[in-house]
Length: 306
Image 1 (cartoon, helix red, strand yellow):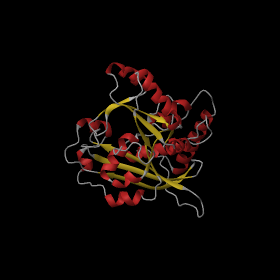
Image 2 (image 1 turned 90 degrees about the vertical axis):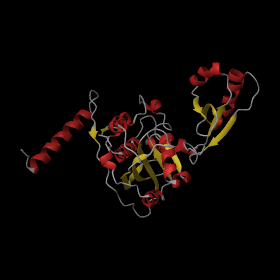
Image 3 (image 1 turned 180 degrees about the horizontal axis):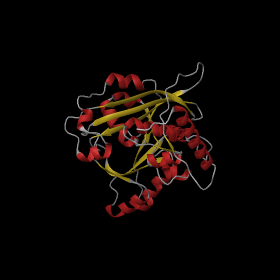
């Protein structure tokens, strides 16, 4: 095998970097750089930072009540009040052997095999120690990951959560969707997602990306959204023939199997709840009703306890 001497390798790298920079300055090209995980850092004395945790799970299925976690990845990071990410504090990555074989479909999706997880258990005490100084946990689909995390580790029940997939309106900021790989490309990177922790590193760069529409990191937008309460409006016993009207307005169906109402529901900002109730009275029920309303915060949003 032919290997270039170190000076030639360094020179080749510099040439490629110079070419990438030149292409990046052109309006005719976009350059994607391979994502390299940030090294951990030591916080500076006196620097006022807060600590967040990025979390991703791989599971044997979609049902948080019966399916199992087979991999947990987390990246703990510090950020400033303006949402700028300062550095990575620590990284957590672990497999977990489920009670039965991993299906071929899950292996095809995640790349995780029975052999990879055999004999592995996630250390509960290590998870608790890792997240205890975090003020918020962020996943790229918190409606999925939070339910699994709470079932395995109750510490997540008391933590604030944010969702990078739904609490940033990516389309309003120039993106065509919220898929993580696409967002990463928009931030100027590509990565080969093999482990849950790899997706956490990718999400870190997405959240640190300065949005051209705001001049601030995407994390600032997410944190602002997560801090605001939302109201969940339940359209219980709504007429079946008007379900399409509810769907068009953004209502989602809950089948009642999780203990919540068997009903359509919609989450809205506090300021919009009166408008939503007026819509239900005039367009759905055709009478004066009082729909069920729940107030959600970052501490309850996305939880299976709501």
